Image 1: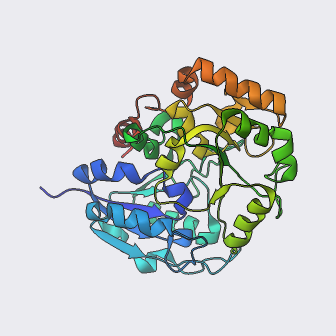
Image 2 (image 1 turned 90 degrees about the vertical axis):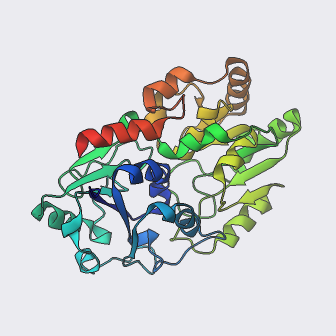
Image 3 (image 1 turned 180 degrees about the vertical axis):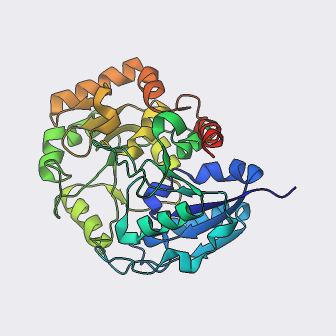
Length: 338
């Protein structure tokens, strides 16, 4: 008996990365095709040194029957006007797993969703990330959605196989001080001084590594790297083929409240999140959420070293988060939806 067929619709590498580890087990139940659109399409230029899209596709393509390359965008603010249905035959699919939960009209997703509805194909959306006001475009781009509490963060399950090393202090930056930002606190000289970063580095006798985001609206990623290095003697990472090991090599983490920060939290690495540098979202009850103040940052690190992993916080926010079994939680919930 042949398997039912599912379509994976991936539009944003940073959003879709949470879903990759679901694919091996999902492929045991369903036949899978992968449709790459928007920021995930090879027709969209990659900004950064390592193309993380290619890394993941090469890692997981053996579980996928067909990879369909859809339209991309040339620059930030560009729109897709092509009908996505011109690239694919929807008739063979039982359901679509969409990597986002926003409407994403700039990639023509609502039109694609309506075509799915005309064929009675269920579309499952997925959390965009940690947000203050979670997107909920049910009826515009998807029918039901998976969130961290129901499906966990499957990408973080791979942390169970990493080896912890206290090699460095990791800074996870959101926006840098050399560009426009929607937030009041960004990674700049003021951040370094007020956080007491240099003193913390000296106290723990550990070097600093700064992880920055590459963005299509700021294509000169080398300029961003150079900006950070003018502020601080440190290593700067823009893209990496092994984000888990970068996290696991951290003795301490100081971060914007981003989805990525769940990784060190799940590993029990002391992790301080700075208010005002990103969306609070799921972190509103996180004990390590502090103001940009040297005393608060340092005291939180000391408290976390003594306390250990915040298991109650993890259990309240991420299905399978403490046991690194989010893939199982995701698949169980998915089966009830399809």
